[in-house]
Structure formats: C-alpha cells, structure tokens
Length: 266
Image 1 (cartoon, rainbow, N blue to C red):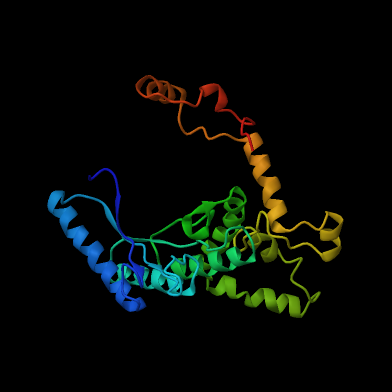
Image 2 (image 1 turned 30 degrees about the vertical axis):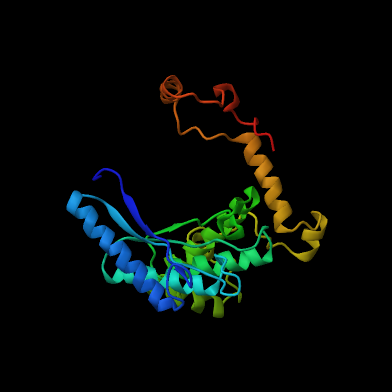
C-alpha cells in the first residue's frame, strides 16, 4: 500500500445517508474517514492516504442527489477545512452539475462549488470536469469548457502577490507624470503572462468582432474544439511495448490500428 496513494471515501449524502444538517454530515464523514485511516495504518504504517470526504446533498423534495447545490459547496469547503485542521491531505468531489447540458445552470453550479472547494484548501478535487446530471452523464464539450473554469479557479487560489515591486509606486508615479496610461509600461508587458490567465474558449472580444465571427456561444466554440482535439490527438501515455504486453495478457477489443489521431467516430 505504501507505493500507491489511496482515498478513503465517505460518500455521506445529507438527508439520506447522513444527517440533514450540513455540520452533522461533515462530522459523520470525517469520523468515517478518520476511522478508515486508523484501520489502514494498522495494516501498513507507511501507507499514503487522503481523507475522501465526498459529502453530497439530497434534494429533500425528491430524495435525489443534488451535485450542484450551494449546500454541497459549503460542505466540501467545510470538509477541506477539517482535513486542514488535522494537517492531513483531503479530497472532495466538486465541479459537478445537476444540469443535463453544458448550459448556464451548469456553469454557475460548477463555478461556485469548485471555487469554494479550492479556496478552502482541498488537496485534490475529484469529478471536477465534464460531470452532468448529478454524475449520471457527461459531455465532451464540458471538459473543454471546464478547463477554462479550472484555470480561472486555480488563478484565484494563487492569490495576489504583494511586495514593493507589485505595489508599483514608481510605475504609478511615472504614468501620473507622463503619458497617463499603463499600456506602454514595461511592467505591463512583463506581467501580462505571469499575473493573468487567458481563457481558451471564454469570449472577451468586442460585440462587433463576436458578430463577425458568427455570434457563437461557448457551447458552439466547445464543440468545435472537441472535434479539433479528436481529429488531431490520441493519448500516447501507453508505449508500444506496454500495449503489446497488455494485449498478450488480456483480450483487448480495441485494435491498435484504431488508436490513432482522427479515428474518433463522433
């Protein structure tokens, strides 16, 4: 066990397999994962473990899991903070949506659940891209849209660098007594690649430019990007020798000739 990290996952669902109170579900999930931690260390004192407090929420009107609720966002943040309190690595599930499509509902639910989990200090956030219908569905387009969201959230986690250089007193003085804008300043050019994140799909163009390019929404942009990726890329993390060894040992139905860029039937 010592070579492979393991997650001790407690999938306590508030109102169903956990108390209806958010604090109670967090307490139950932490107790379950800490008990599992003790048991794992009794087996192997060198094991690598994270507390997988995957707290989720029931919609108490129907009993169905609500993966994109603000209550889930609060519980994953609380679980992350509790793992930090014990000085232990902790993982949560966030970035999911109850929406069945990559629409405005999905964007909102994914955004606030991811942001709270990350800002609360989660070591690892599972289910953070592509997940819909309370984990019953997924969409290729959502993976590329969520990539933008994850980049933005990680930028907020990095925070603001504060020192004499970033407070920019001299730069402000030079602009105030000079040409009156910061665009031409050396610091502006220097910092544009280190302090700022630029979305791959998110549109920041002018209204006129957007209209000239066909007035496409983010779903249309994502669909085009998915087609581009499937046409140009195929994962190559399994080398040919390992692939051959696996095929000799198991009945792999996917021919190696199909594992090439452009072969996706989508």
